[in-house]
Amino acid sequence: EAGSYSEGDSSAGYLAFGNRQPTNNIVEVMRINRSGNVGIGTTNPLAKVQINNEGVFNTTTPGASAYYGLHFGGQTTADYATGITWNGGTSGTQAGIYVQGSGAYGTKMYFATTNSYATGAQNRMMISQHGNVGIGTTTPTATLSVSGGNVFINDAVITSGTPKAAVTKEYLDSALGTLSSVPKFVGVTASAYNGTSGGNPGYGYANSLCAAAFTGSHVCTTYEMLNTINASSTMPTVDVWVHAGPPGYTALANDCDGRRNSSSAAYGTYWQMSDASYAPSGRGLLMTCNNSLQYACCK
Image (cartoon, rainbow, N blue to C red; front, side, top):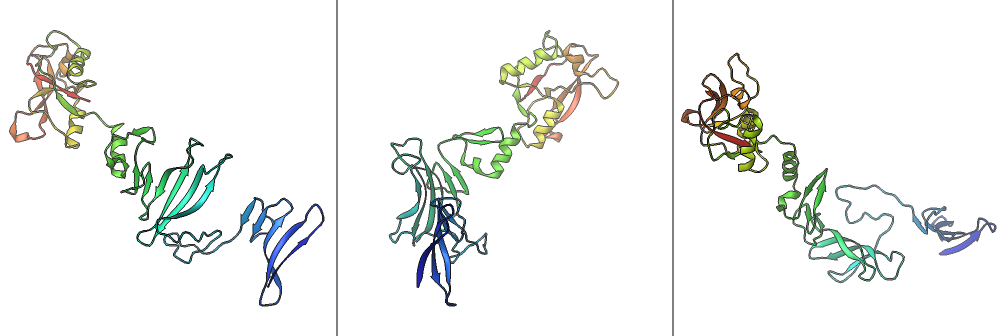
């Protein structure tokens, strides 16, 4: 047995619906207030439809009996869908949340918006039956699959041309770490030079020789050579000049005095690769600046 009743004056009237309980009393189950708001499980609906319901929730596996505030019975034909749709203030369906189901695979959820009322709702993101999220694709093969656009993460842009590994934590850690990483060895100059770069003194000219050979590079420092070793990257195959800055000893060994001295009285730091007993990493040593070596270039 069920019934409806109204109560109140002109400023607070409402229409309530109830059903009779085993104790022979009628309990309200739904109400329409004077504003036209419908409340289920509440006597004070604040929106057009407000449903109040609660229950214990298993965040990992809610299960087949986890019925909460609003439940859609769904379709009976495989691969058909049910959902909630919006018209966005115009005619037709312009956005929606849809659930597609089949006994063959389970359920998939789709989220749609539009940038054209004439076109209507367009799928933007979906969650597969396996929990994979697809943006720009309806067949995500990883936990997150992005297709047809870029991913922007903390000032780093992973483009659509980046390998699929871009969506893994390992790849992103590597990509973001590269932004602030120490330069590594990339190659050597074609020619060999003495302490003054063949009569062209100064660090700037020496660096320009590397930049001409490898765009954006400069003469490697000892720290950058060590970083190359730590990264297990390719090392030079010949002895090469590197820069080390001020000396840690009394000899005149300040990079051939800032690449301005080509005499046998001055010393510069070089990376020795010719001694096979130190292969494959080599070692840093001093050499008099009247000798000519190629420059190691880093970027």
